[in-house]
Image (cartoon, rainbow, N blue to C red; front, side, top):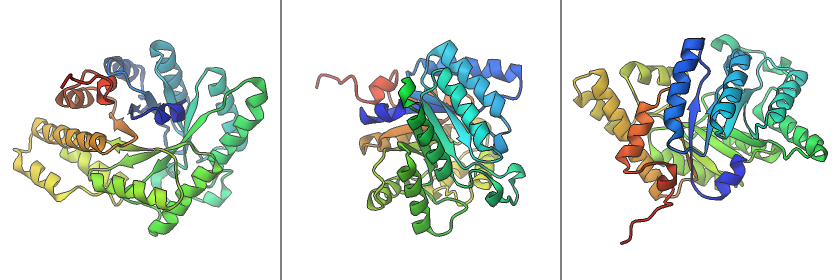
Length: 308
């Protein structure tokens, strides 16, 4: 279970989203096989708004586990799901040997207003509580139970203006049974370390894994800003982008360099884990590892030390 992995030191993980067709699935698995050589601690598979990729997520999860043996963590969201549907999904994952779930509230279908009061699970804490109770009910049958991860927002949750309330919501998820936190992407490490400090002050003692996404294009930056309201691109990063000739390759190199420096700093200051948002490609993540001078995650974690 991922919670146990986090107890043993720094983890390194990759996130993918379900492809829309068979061609996309083949391309995805080509990248997954390349990244498998980096020996990640686990990989996660996202879940579309309103459960829109429910079957695709499940298929990718099972295929990754069966074809690679990687520890695989599916995302699961509250939106538009009944208790019986969540029960069915959990039973299916348990039967196939999946050991961890990332429990999320999820985005409203269509991205507009949504009647959350009509949902069986209006908050992620309720989904966490349901999974924890599922674990308890199935212990007698020898099921070890799912490790439960939840989302954290170093720059602030876009739907919560009050940062004190935001930490209370995170505490509610941990109190309901969450074992670890995976953060939204960020580009200023001070935000992550401040978030970790505020977790400790709020009585949140579970590991916090840092989410890293290398910028790949100007259009990608604009999409990230639209999807994650409140996301901050540091001025020094923007200056680096403006110094380029504007080509896709130049922007990609700035993004990889910035993410590499983030990873170096996170490692130097004891981050519990680094979670790479891969956008279903392998090149940027592989380049970060190479620039850091390591072969795989074992070296990143300090498993091999030079004799000096």
